[in-house]
Image (cartoon, rainbow, N blue to C red; front, side):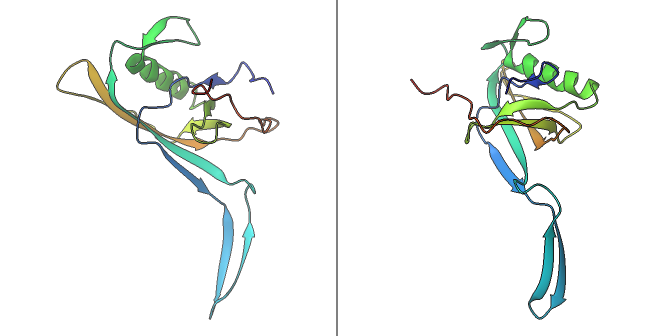
Length: 152
């Protein structure tokens, strides 16, 4: 499936410290003595979330092209601008490629703030974001994995 132009793609998914999680929406009742009942109220695929971490990011390199302006931005400014643009658009959903399963997911920022930490050397920064899977009526990805950029 082609990616709709209305969804941006996050081109940088962190350096180290990736966390992945999956949650299932269930209603459960405990009747005592080991008896109970439950029903799945959400997707059978669950809802995924990620914590992406960038440590020791150089404030000048590498350069990433902005998908909006085409300007080349360093990673620190690319991520800052991407976050601000998405939040200014009411936390609009965007696309990431999970680095483990290579699947594409529609996500939103889970946190309403972004903090960048500068190292002693003004050239290096560290920061992290939490993402939560988003679903939009009428849109889904085909079960096609994104290409592995590390493969030949």
